[in-house]
Each structure stands twice: as C-alpha cells, then as structure tokens.
Length: 132
Length: 106
Image (cartoon, rainbow over all chains, first blue to last red; front, top):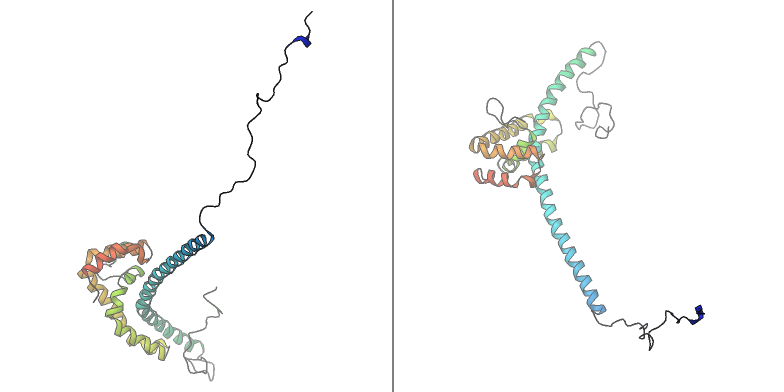
C-alpha cells in the first residue's frame, strides 16, 4: 500500500551550492566636484543672477523715467486749462457770495480766506479728497 | 474714440494725443512750460498766472496741430495705439519709431 510517506520530498529550497553572496556593505564613491567647486559654482550663479537683476532694474528705471518725463511735459497744459476753468467758476462764486451777503454789515465780500498771505484753494469741507 | 481731431481738424488734447506728442512738447514748448511753472511756484493763485497759462496752451495746441498736419497717418496710428494701451510707451514702440522718423524730435 503506497502512502504519503513514500512520495518523493518536494521542497522549495536553495539551489545546490547555495545562493551567491549578497553585497550589503556601503560603497559611496568619493568622486565629483569638491566643496570649493560647488561653492564657487553657486556663488557664480548667484552673482550672475544679481547682475541680471541690476540690468533689468536699469531698463525698468528708464521706462519709468520715460513715463514721468511725459507727465512732466503735459502737466503745464493741463494745469493751465484747469486754471482757466477755475477762474471762471470763482468769479461766478464771488458774485453769488456778494449777492447773498449784501445785507450783512461789515462783510468784505470776495476773498475771505486765511491770514498767511498765500493763496489756498477753496476748502470744500472734505478733509482729504484724494482718500474719499 | 473716433479720431484724434475734431471737426475743424484741430487735434483734441486727450491723454492719448498729449502723451503721444509729449516728447515733442518737452523740447519745443520748454520755455513756456518753465515760465509757467516758475510763475506757479512764486504764487499758486491761478489768477496771477493766467497769461503764462495761455501761452502754454497756445504753444501746445499749435504744436499738436503742426505735428498732425505734417505726419497725419503716423500720428493717427500712434495716438490710436496709445489709446488702446492706455498711454503705455513700451507697448507702442513700432508706432513710435514710425512717428519719430517722419516727425523727428529736434
């Protein structure tokens, strides 16, 4: 009677002679750029970048200068036009003030402004018109 | 915007036209501008500097009309580009070169 014990043994095991040896030791190569070389390369890249930043700033400054020069050139025309408009409106306002205050004794019509002697633009009640 | 000139052929001093001719203004209307600014610095009262202001306006409007008559197409192209790019010089270099070739700055 054949039994399981008579069957040939079929095991999973190493090949004859064993496995080849496995390397487990570190082997980090010691070649490549030195520390000084890496530092000089980084420093060189940095200085080249900063030089390019400076060049770019020069170009941007020239563009801004062009824009500001254009504004400086057209400022007097715009101010002159605004002055004409303001003087017209101011005369109308002075007439209106004279008519409103004609019965008030001792009211010096016209310019009732500050005592410093400098001309100040009329106060419209806004403290900082550029903010509001 | 329809064009740089109004019905009678005078250039309208909009921001686009003014910035387009700003380089010409800064050389050719320099005396009037400087006189007006000096007057303003002395006294900020607008009534005191009206005559100098009128000189400035006359100079600039005359200059714009002269430029427009001498180089109509290039100036129209430059002003159109300025209007489109809201007075950004760097985006209108081509039109600027063409304009300054026909109407050179002194």
